[in-house]
Amino acid sequence: MRNLKLFFCLTLLLLPALAVATPDSVTTACPEVKLQMEQLPDLNIPRSSHSTFFVNGELVVAGGHTNGFVPTPTAEYLKDGEWHVMQMVYTHDFGSSVVMKSGKVLLFGGCDQPIGIGQTFLAERYDPQTHTFDGFGCMERKRAGTNGLELNDGQVVISGNWYHTDGIEVFDGQKHFTYIKDPTVERANPQILRTASDNALIFSAQDTKGNPTSYVADFLKGDSVHIPLFETWHPLLLSTHRMADSFIGDEAKGLYSYLIPVADSTGQIAIAKVENGVFSLLPTACPIPMQSRSQGEAVYYNQPIVVDQQARRAYLVGISGDFLSSPDKANRLYIVCIDYSEATDSKPAPMTLYYTDPITTIPDCAPVLDADGNLLLAGGLLHLSNFTPSAAVWRLRVGSEPSAVQSGSNRWLMVLLILAALLIVCACAYLILKKRRQRSTADTEVSESMSVEASAELMVRINQAMKSQKLYQNSDLKVTDLAAAIGTNRRSVSDCINSQKGCTFTQFVNIYRVDHAKRMMRQNPDKKIADIYLESGFANEGSFFRTFKAVTGMTPKEWLSKA
Image 1 (cartoon, rainbow, N blue to C red):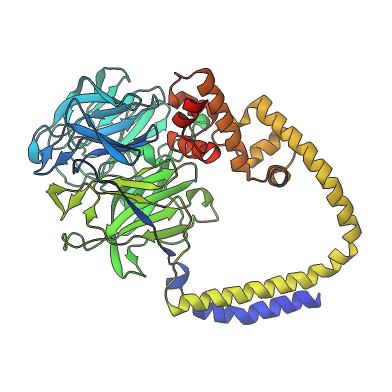
Image 2 (cartoon, rainbow, N blue to C red; image 1 turned 120 degrees about the vertical axis):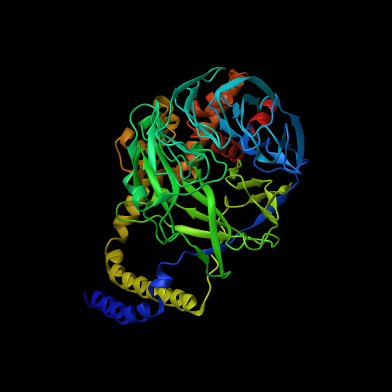
């Protein structure tokens, strides 16, 4: 009891010092991290307003315009450190793309003339297995500044236009487009989110001529709705994007959740969570940084949120805020990392602000994730001019965990005081528990020897459940799910896997998933890659390629060639 009183007294004495060292401006500040960047080989063709995607383990860029603001009917894929040029059937400058569950990519719309003039009906498909394009038809309405999203049944919802009449239509996943209805509000670059397996919600920050919209949203099936959140927080005007890359939900459980950036009347950015059509703000540990403390410059955001479902993190990319007034100046990139899975009703999501060295390229396309969970940026603008696109390609290494770079004497004082507090807590805890440990040493030794046997027996039950029930096929499998399946608690399962297998729960489950994928590839070498990773329990293609390589040291294609 005396030790406990000492602990409380020391803590109370320390609190005033902590309060002085950590004012609101410090405690609510986002930690800042210098991010490692890697410049990859330049594109063969400088390009802007193109589509970028990561499929079949390869980074691909398609369409856009090149020098002189001229549309290019070419695409390129990066393999073995070299870009390989492909001929497309059509041009898609300011066009759109949808990475489909089949593994193929739908490309559609765009400007039909140089310097961003006109629209096009045209659509084609890219097959990453053969590196070929198939031009198969046209949409019901010619479009530029459009967007698309695949539903669960393989149909693609398409909406949006630029300086032309808008409308909502559906691609059947094969070759045909069907016009569905006129929108309540005509939109450019709309955001399209699934609200159910067969329905979607459509909204945007601007109309077909760039004016602010009334923020009324249209359902694919159903009446239009007013979004209450948009009365205070408006959707951000985004560059080329795919909303499927912002998905954080679980299709198997019927949860269709997305993260989108929103802004208030002052320009402050926040993160909105949209679940089955219901909008709310995601609680975050600090406001989205609008200015870097360590670099002393404003940050401007115009990109969608990119989600790494495997790591359960989301990224929002920005750029130095003075790029509009100084287009010839090199600019830093800023990346807000949001650990969204840790957010609860009582706990906000932790955030980190990454920043890079200055670069001369201004990205104008959304980044994509590679197999290792890093962000890839390809092309963009030089000097903020559509007539001078960039060929630069960058990898932003957010897949690793750099240490936060703190700044300011107050920050160091705060760290020292917190360390002192932790030392005091540890000392008090040690004194309080010391007697208890001395009394139960004999009992502890007995229970530890018993726990070895119990742990081995529990491991057998865990493996039996994983194999017989194929629990690993659930892409959202948690420790609690496995514990419930064998009638024990999550701590026992986690400790058992750690002691018996020497790995984490996630690593353990991923080994089962990779083994299942290897069996499928060996038995059915012609099976679609999308079917393989989904049936093996992976949430998306990126996590499949990343995990497969981490477990086997090879890509799926390399492993299959040696199997």
